[in-house]
Image (cartoon, rainbow, N blue to C red; front, side, top):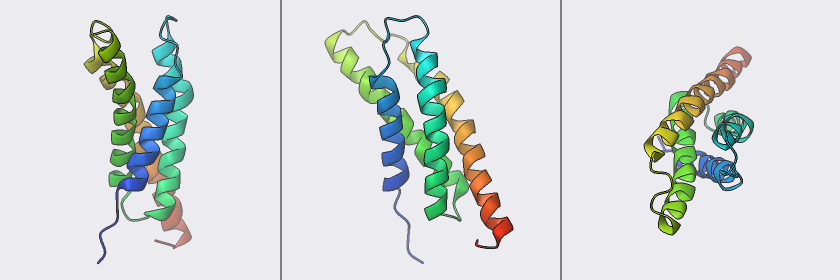
Length: 124
């Protein structure tokens, strides 16, 4: 049996996480939540659906890899900001936990939704 690559789900997650964090204007009060609820959550849902189409038998792993990619994308902006100003993002572990608390459940719902569709259709 051939081992499937994790590059696609991680790359999609990184794109979503980076886009969601690099486009957010953190001078606004609720920029983190707007980034989470309008970009990262729907993006993670769609990315996990897309990955689930190609990797049908691994729904939990697909959800975890997309979520891991989103975390890496978030870390790219956090580390870039910390290089410029070390006192910015001094609570970044909490930013990551809030982000992952939103993205992981949505990714799992999406992964098992597409998995259930394939089971019902008999394509699994």
